[in-house]
Length: 185
Ligand SMILES: [Zn+2]
Image 1: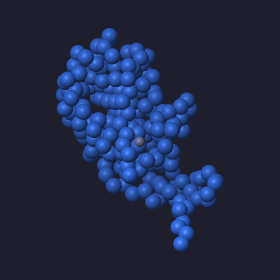
Image 2: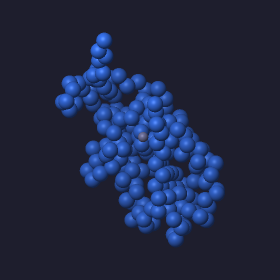
Image 3: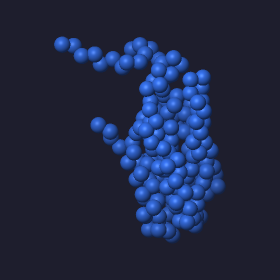
């Protein structure tokens, strides 16, 4: 018996258009809250970290009510020129939950160990819409991890690139970037 491995949306070999993206989006169900899980956890860290807003992700179209997600990073409170600076990111892929919660837990439990040793910039959830849907792609069916490039089509990637560029212009080159992914199968 032959199995049908064809994806249920679109035509094999042909790029998706708006209609296919709408079909795909209609199947994505909001299952958890970025505000509750991420923004609230970041807010609770204000006594230890500087919270740095770095824009927002905003989505809407004819079939979809507007949604806004504030983007927030955590920055070492006593940023010291001369120390190596390290970027930690989670949730570039929204369905890779351990990266989001791992970055938050790292910020909650291990920040003090790096005081005087490294400057830390932690972005716990790069792709909030996808985090809520437990999805790899963003609202536009784009993989943010394939979109870290000039003129990025992914708002999430463009915002993170702006944050990093601004940071490096102000504080100098980052020494390392730890990007938290996981295998899902
Ligand atoms: Zn990933």
